[in-house]
Amino acid sequence: MTVTSELISLGNDTDVHLYRTMEAVPEAWDQLAPKQNLFLQRSYLAVLENFPPTEMQFAYLLFYQQNEPVGIAIAQIQLFRANQNIQEEKEDAGLLGRIGNFVKEKVAEKISFYTLVCGNLLLTGEHGFYFSSQINIADKIDVLHKGLNAVLPKLDEQGIEVSAILIKEMEAENKKEVGPALCKYYQEFTMQPNMVFELDPNWRTFQDYIDSLSSKYRVRMKRGFKKGAQIRKENLDLDALIANKKRIHDLYMGVANNSDFNSAELHEDYFLELKRAFPHRFQLMGYYIEDRLIGYYTTIKNYKELEAHFLGIDYEQNRIYQTYLNILFDITKDGISMGVEKIIFARTALEIKSSIGAEPQEMYFYARHRSKFSNRLLNYMVDYLQPKSPEWIQRRPFKK
Image 1: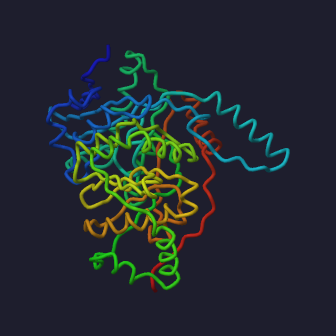
Image 2: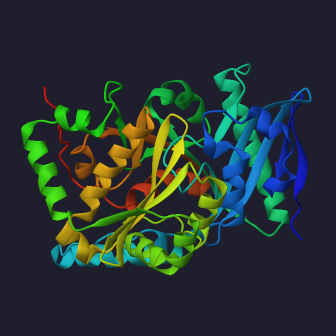
Image 3: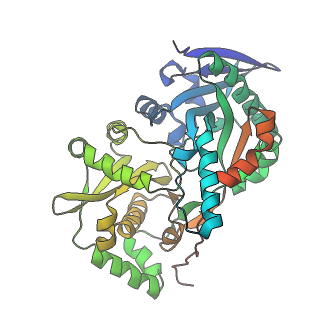
């Protein structure tokens, strides 16, 4: 039976309370959770826990100093299987290239371990921990590190032998302050950048955005709109989500299986429950040709940010109707109408996202293996196994 709560002393009048369910977490969490980040608040975390991705488990850390709550951290416990999570497209690089691919596949088959992820595998951004401002940066990281490590033997006792800790992820701006403290304990690495669209505060309507584009990109946009003119768009309510649940999940799986790296597979009811919990924050916009759902996108309004969440696309229909390009423009239109400051477009499809105005934002990860020997090899393994970043040209669509 899983223990739902444990108290662990970290020394220097500092404790961490470990909870395995959000239901067991006390109200002190709500007092500390940042008011402008939905993804660290109980309401969202409860949905994710109750309708989790395949094989994902959870832990919640509540830190106290001198019996006063000072920090929170979420941890996702995920079984990482290199040969399943990494789906890099193989290039035909002759005999030596094929031998290299074969060796890489054999290495990947042997790599399977539980990882304690401080952060959220379903999101891009800093959604892993938060401490009150009364604690300085170095102390925050020291307390977080001690807390995460103290959790490992407790999980061992519960039959979950975690091999590595991953802290995801840090923006470049905050890395300047937090990075040196993290690098005392963890190895730093990067992956593809987060594509972030900071909206011009002078844009009141989508037409304002269009007017700011250079003629080349206005022509491209109009061409995409013309190809997608037959698409009927519908903001699906809860009943429509229930009726289309299987098709929605099938389209999502098509995208997930086409991705270079797929860290987690969504629960079939995840979107339904987001709609139940956040009827005004969450939307799933369906794209139909006649009565056939050929694609959709989901967004979550996270206060001043709009999170472009998961999507599903019929790739054959995408070639005809430019579904994906229309999705990017429609999310931009949503962001402007909602009055948010920025849209988080996340990773993948970097060039096309830059063509509508998103800019790359480097993100930093911090990892530590439990074994000292494996920890020394960690950077090499990350470099060897992670999919190669595609070459891309950053587009600049606005008038100079």
